Length: 126
Image 1 (cartoon, rainbow, N blue to C red):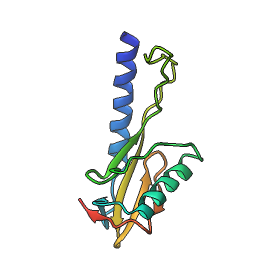
Image 2 (cartoon, rainbow, N blue to C red; image 1 turned 45 degrees about the horizontal axis):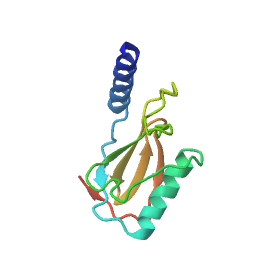
Image 3 (spheres, rainbow, N blue to C red; image 1 turned 60 degrees about the vertical axis):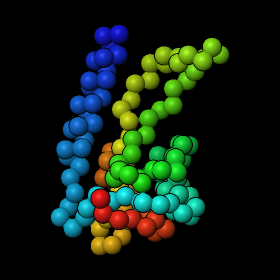
């Protein structure tokens, strides 16, 4: 139990450090996508899959509709009894930000600040 608490504290501190260092440039602002079209959602899912080196990820239809950030976490593995199995895989969530720069919408991977333009999404500033 103590190990789990300590791991969670470390993960939060790493996340806060990442958020602090991933600052916006003066010409960009946090953005959201108020309503996804089928094309924009397909593009967003494909872009995140590319950023994660083709790792399949579930991205819901409300991604970025209310917040300029999403967190991607590993899906817990459940046993036959429905309880979560402790696999000892302890990794911090992956954070993606959505920004608007020069009227263009970009997905930013906070791990490496890599940017991906989303051409089909209709972004607006938060």
